[in-house]
Image (cartoon, rainbow, N blue to C red; front, side, top):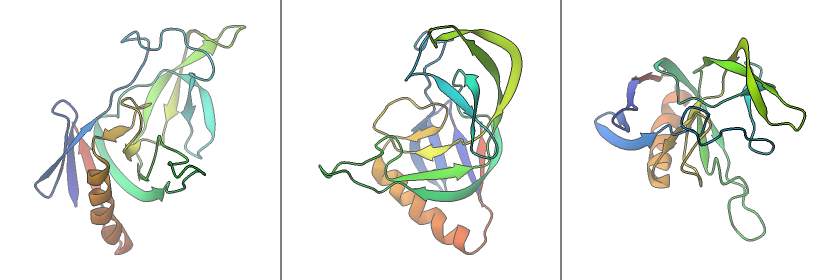
Length: 168
């Protein structure tokens, strides 16, 4: 099964249904993360899930990627609010990756400059969020659309069906 995510149009198409998505990042290019320090640093995520060197976020990579699973983030805090509002309630995992510039940090822990090295960054997916921006994932505009997508994906993955996302 193939899905199409057209980031220039802001649309994910699933069997004719159009879901509003975007991959808006804050980085040095758009001036929205000029010399950030902790806690606003972004680190690459390596293939094994560990954090790698510092990088600046880039939008979801163009290409053909595979949906690899659904990760629940349903926990609520004592006030009944999502414990992890950035990824609540689900994260649709993919095998998407891209090579990013590695950044050095200055003595205060702020971005300094590109090192000239590249690092392969993983962990791109689709999710709803309390934030308008992401660190490269596709942000689904409406929680109800994410829930619909998860309900659509889950039985197909359970049956061993391959689900690809073509990102243009």
